Amino acid sequence: MVLKLYAVSDGPSSLSVRQALKVLDIPFDLTNVDYGAGEHMTPEYAMMNPQKEIPVLEDDGFYLGESNAILQYLCDKYRPQSELLYPQEPRARAIVNHRLCFNLSTYYANISAYTIYEWYSNFKKDNPDLWKISEDAMKEIKHFIANPPDLTHLNHPIHPARKIKKKK
Ligand SMILES: N[C@@H](CCC(=O)N[C@@H](CS)C(=O)NCC(=O)O)C(=O)O
Image 1 (spheres, rainbow, N blue to C red):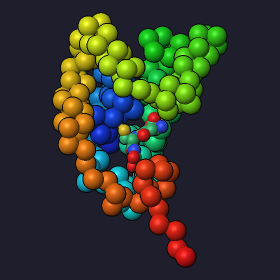
Image 2 (cartoon, rainbow, N blue to C red):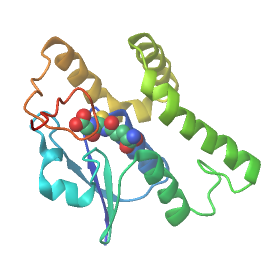
Image 3 (tube, protein in one colour):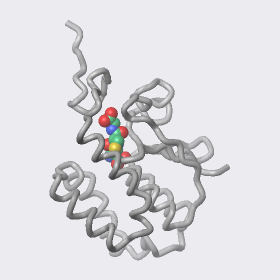
Image 4 (cartoon, rainbow, N blue to C red):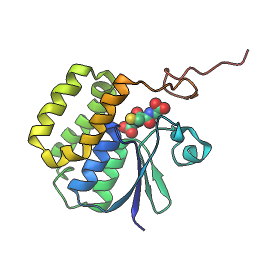
């Protein structure tokens, strides 16, 4: 059964998984989740990922959220001998794990507009093939910046931007 990725078109976590799938040459079906419409907030979506976050990988009935966990799973299960993204040698692997942890704990959590634009402009020059995957997403981001969606109707368990009304 072919892998299925539930992804959002402009989400860095979704894009990193799509880029890894391409680099590792792993076939998959892409399902775009409409973030603005709150498609990830439905009970059906929560069955796949109780965190109600995008992306989610589906592998023959096995569902996995958290992009770093997905990246590690893809390498471990589908390209275990490949040194391309996830080396076997413990210290080299530890460095990769460190970067993934750093991204989750610090970098992505504190990312600023300056960092985004610096990174994207270099990445675009250095990796034109991978950039193509992100290109449309950048157009959407520019559109969203100009026309921010109203997400106040979402009731999110994690992100403080979604204000959960407490019962009195
Ligand atoms: N740590 C997660 C973060 C994923 C994440 O934040 N995804 C965003 C979309 S880019 C999301 O689903 N947010 C849910 C929300 O804001 O309601 C990962 O790396 O997969």
